[in-house]
Amino acid sequence: MILELDCGNTFIKWRVIEAGHDRVIGSGVVGSDDELVARLKAIPRLQLRHCRLVSVRTDEETERLMASLQVHFGVVPVMVRPAERLGGVTNGYEQHQRLGLDRWMAIVGGYRLARGACLVLDLGTAVTSDLVNSDGAHVGGFICPGISMMRNQLRTHTRRIRYDDLAAERALQAIEPGRSTVEAVERGCLLMLQGFVKTQIDMAHHAFGESFTVFLTGGDAVLVQDVLPEAKVVPDLVFVGLAIACPLS
Ligand SMILES: Nc1ncnc2c1ncn2[C@@H]1O[C@H](COP(=O)(O)OP(=O)(O)OP(=O)(O)O)[C@@H](O)[C@H]1O
Ligand SMILES: CC(C)(CO)[C@@H](O)C(=O)NCCC(=O)O
Ligand SMILES: [K+]
Image (cartoon, rainbow, N blue to C red; front, side, top):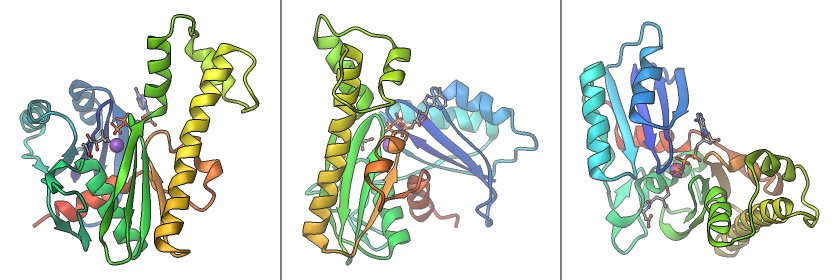
């Protein structure tokens, strides 16, 4: 069994697959290293032989997690390293090692699945967009705040925007102009997100013409799915890239 991890800024996304079969034995999202260990220990007949991970956390945090996995499960995790080329994709950053490794894994995975030009949209703590042309050249991308960050910034930096999470959830059942603070803010942030992804589609059309694949991933992908009917929602896109970056030798 192989443990795969995508360590983001807020959550760790994990899954356990059967080596050679790609059959998923378990998967989930956890908020801490300890929670991950507990979730894994609860899997009956777990036998981890390998572990591969991608992390955008600090080296210290990532090393702590790797050490904990070694202690609890006896696996030595393999970590994705920056590269200029992988899986037919060329990193488009001026300094390739600066491109977030989760973005790198998602575009390598996207290019593999698309076998051609693609636009990769990842909606998590941050929202990222990356374009890859039909030759596999990553032409660059964009980073902006995720929806939680947008609304939290509004709440933090204004004095009169105050509401609870339940009201927030209810406000998003429609997108008419808001008639209360919670509706105005929640719907405003949602429209920013949707506007952003639609602009990315326009940009991809401009760059690639009609033939490109749109991939949507990350925890908040559902929020824009309706406005992007052409997008393929692939929650495990980062793991597709991860298998290419860290094959079992
Ligand atoms: N405590 C939780 N347990 C399980 N799932 C959760 C929990 N909290 C949030 N989630 C869900 O997990 C997903 C988190 O994925 P997401 O891609 O947003 O990760 P992130 O770590 O916030 O972002 P990033 O990887 O970009 O840093 C979301 O779908 C969210 O709704
Ligand atoms: C943008 C995030 C936070 C998305 O998870 C991550 O990919 C990251 O920390 N990237 C480093 C900066 C960059 O990609 O230019
Ligand atoms: K991510």
